[in-house]
Length: 196
Image (cartoon, rainbow, N blue to C red; front, side):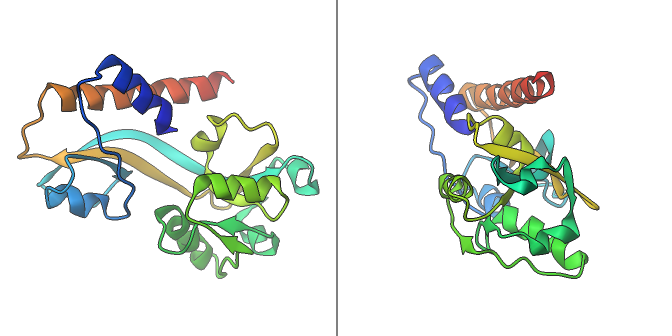
């Protein structure tokens, strides 16, 4: 989802250097000064961190369109224990959210396969190995006509996503511009999803 954002930003500001790092320790790394800006789930309030809300994301079940399951408009969370799944590993932030909701419902997910990459998850879904659970906005903004999204209900796993940086850190023109670019990109993606 962020690839086109980064390409657009680089084309507009070719002299600005950006390092994109995927980590489950975003908040800690921002606090420690290892990274300047992070995009993460809303952390607990901390006076050292400025939070800019970006969006609320719901997770959906992504299935191969040719399956019987694809005909359903929604599926209760508890029914997922009967579905063959491919998921991120347990230490991944998305998986932790899913596991939290499943545990609250009295069951544990037992995926057929686990992988750390989004592209691998989507390939496994397309090959019919299993369904996956991912942020709806993410999947809706990928050009994949073979995957059908199904709403998860009772409850719908969801989380708030925000951009964070240290309150005592000076943000130069490049950082402020990048933050504005991220906000604009997210709003355009949300608007595009609503219109589609």
